[in-house]
Length: 563
Ligand SMILES: Cc1cc2nc3c(=O)[nH]c(=O)nc-3n(C[C@H](O)[C@H](O)[C@H](O)COP(=O)(O)OP(=O)(O)OC[C@H]3O[C@@H](n4cnc5c(N)ncnc54)[C@H](O)[C@@H]3O)c2cc1C
Image 1 (spheres, helix red, strand yellow):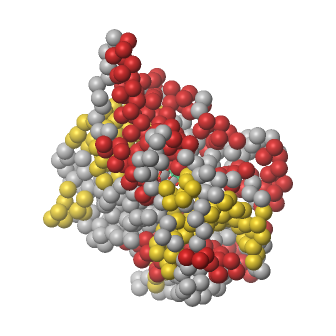
Image 2 (cartoon, protein in one colour):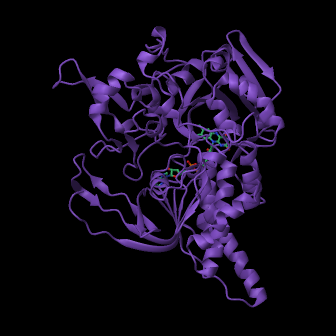
Image 3 (cartoon, rainbow, N blue to C red):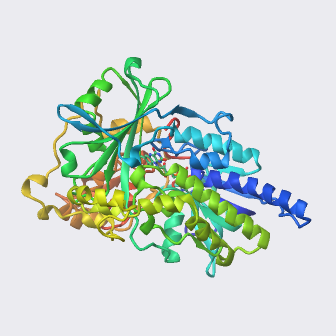
């Protein structure tokens, strides 16, 4: 928008951006901890804390709509937050009673003893979307306000202090002009702003860059493709949790799969591809489709019905990639701060615990009325003396070990497991995943072309087809929320050097090189932003780092109900 607009403003004590498990657990814990503080204060004859005003912004149309996870959840953090969660109708699908670790090969599958990181008996299989709705209801009942359909668009910063967030404008046309339904975003001022935007958060990225918070290693990522299928009841096994990989493909590229049974004869199937491929043709969606043609998956999905599709990136850097967690006026929680334990494919309990530790810090800040790093810095101390830090410490070299390739990983793994996460080298360095991508000319001739694969429309599907199962909708007449800084790079240098890998790594057919009528024989980039499933892969994997994912209008995007 070129003209200045008048904006409403709002003041709250604590503002959360993103209604994921990190923020929701934090907001609920904050309310509980304030109550506890005040009970103790009353007994000790000390002044209470004024009950805080707490607001959560969520870009999805309702809480849970943008949640996508496996998900088999370690219940540790939830038990601390709501000790009787089982009696309070928490939406567990099943409790894991079988934790398999399978190698899928061209003749069938081989079951191995599960390594420690995949021993998940007693963990809860959940739809994170449903779990977030459950947490959101509890937070609201405790006095937290939630605004779904509102995006955090810009950090408000005064000097070196975060003072709040500007929400996104609504009703702007594709040329950036206001439409008849134009509504300018609000300025929301807060004593503490907590960024719980999940992986590759927009404001979190701004904060990390502006305050130079990045950890010793860069943040690295995988992309997870998830499908829910309704299978033959005879093949359905309540409590089954399987992780595995396909052989011999694992010798070429690191990947992993999951299979969890859900209620109503549903299964959650997922395939995870690391975003550090040398080959620009690497395509997480295609890998997930190919895996379904292995004999066991073919058998399992025979006669089954596809119900949902989605994709999302997962932070894998771990401890050494974690940014500094606080600045004056703001804290980072959950995946936005790389809390996910990628070794265990487990981030829900880590996100919740980080949020809870942040909440305890905020109670201290409210008590002292000090929202500078002097008090907010105790979040990092709380984290260091928590089980979340111990868990991350055990997994500290996992991401870097994978980055060195399957052979190094296999050699390093025994040392890592028996030396408390140390491995052959500690601390292992990593490079950003996109820097691994080779130019086509650097690859052997037979690897330069994308491998041909025919989708059969029964077991395997194209991206265009699958996007319809993500429930994604975006208003077409709005500025593309996928901002490409220089599209000439796409037509010229990227086309030649890498063959436009955005067409491959995006799992939702957002990017397409189409003939350019003004330049005969050349192609130009067309962005189908309406297909975007908010996975953030493009923002991460682009070799020139010219793609920036920004939030579209609030309330748009995927509908990940059940995911
Ligand atoms: C494919 C996949 C499989 C996984 N499997 C498992 C598993 O089996 N077990 C497990 O424990 N963990 C698993 N994880 C990890 C786990 O899901 C995450 O670690 C966890 O969800 C992180 O929680 P969070 O609250 O930090 O972020 P998220 O859960 O990502 O929530 C962030 C929320 O913020 C909202 N948001 C983002 N930006 C903005 C903005 N600017 N304005 C407003 N709202 C915004 C989003 O819409 C979203 O609702 C998996 C992750 C993926 C992607």
